[in-house]
Length: 212
Image (cartoon, rainbow, N blue to C red; front, side, top):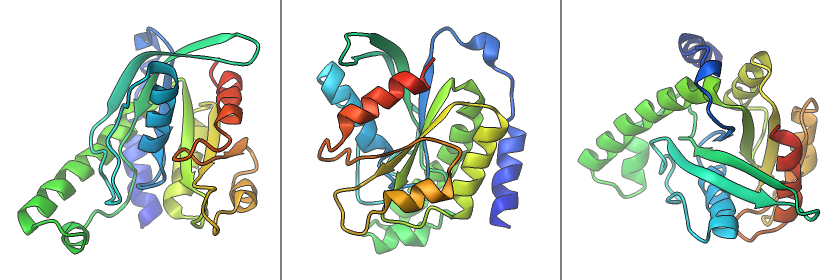
């Protein structure tokens, strides 16, 4: 049921937007609270000196597509890579307003957040065909074999979109990069801690291989 729900959404928004691309778009995709916005902020802080997105311990903090134009990074050889960074809402199959109430939000706030989060999921999927490359951000402490993750990866693979998997939160003891690699052996996996900047230089090097 979960897989069918996501497949329906992905199929519904399978548009051909290739001729609308004016420049390279790099999308950050994945389930809620994997660290997409933290990675977006790390990139923008390192190369633009400013933050891009708001982060929170409550899921679905990012409920709208956030875009930072003209992000330029350099590697150790001085080569420059410029792209538009697209931070997307976390993709989920079920968004229950009662979960937000348990996090301390009022009922009115919780219902509003749930409605916005649902729209955010649809928008994220709608934007997928407009991506040139995608970084799938996963929490390395969690089981990567979820239906949401498998469906996201499957749809990216079907669209032939270049993918890099960021196994985030490696600063935590339960993190397992090897488990993520075993789950998706068809794609390169980089372990990192966006929060603390761990292995971020290797992450940037991988972006040069990803974004073409």
